[in-house]
Length: 420
Image (cartoon, rainbow, N blue to C red):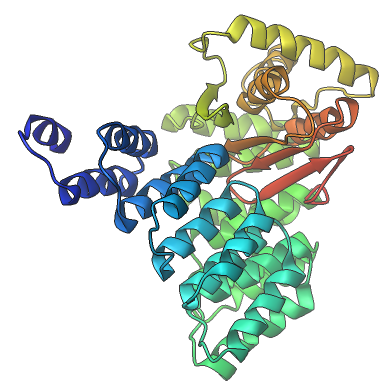
């Protein structure tokens, strides 16, 4: 409706354009936001800082670094003010697009920074697993006289979790109220659960949840369940599942997580129980998609989707990649695949996961040393993670994958997440 009214307007000023672009960005219609920005430019209208914040934020969510860099150039060439809000948006964009070095460079160039600017950088460092750097910038922020906010600690604790800094993370959690007067919120307790769980301290993590002064919510129990998957602890997972599934009976991810844990510990009767529960309640796993930017255009891949104009070439390229990584030792791992299909179907489905199609397209259309950057809406499954490590080694390519939880930097057969 808003776009129809906008299109029918006989005259539009910059405020009108800004409102429409910002509306798209705030409602997660990022491709529409950048499409409208292009129309604005084609009409010779100069964007202001407000428009650019919405556009740059949209590029951040799409993982479109080439377009983001062009937007940055637009800011410089048009002498727009690198104010706190615009500067922070650029820091966030570069971090979300996988270039933490450029994020730090923009941050250092900002004439003025507020606590949200520092927090955006700490968040970026956390996503990339640079825990020590995140703590260093936090100390620098505090020494500059700025008081951290609760969101600052969310990202700081996340950084410690991804970096395996258990003691430091617990120390920072304790310092929130003691040193800064910030009452921990549920998300901070969730970070501590994740911190302990990632380190394999599952009993401590469960005890922490049970002794929390506030009632744990589903994401907190979910963090513990995710740790059980990694460390293959079916006993704690079952206790957590009995609490978690009634809390969110329509959330497919928890059924799949619990089923994967059962499958990895050869508890096939429990796997079947999970499958039946999902079927009876009509719960379906959300479709995964992967985005890749090539030559300034964002391509969206979904498993089983044949709509891409080059899909036949892409699938042939993936088959070629598959042959080469099999020679390097790859065997399909179906433990994370949907559990209501047989093994042959599972393996075929694995080889058409959205990120594998995106990687094949990236290898087709780009050359080293340009990194292949992919944004995925779901967690990277174990099989895709293993395959991508081998692809980075066999093809000599750097692959940067942003999934629902963090960044994975694949180089020479290894990943920055250390396989967690």
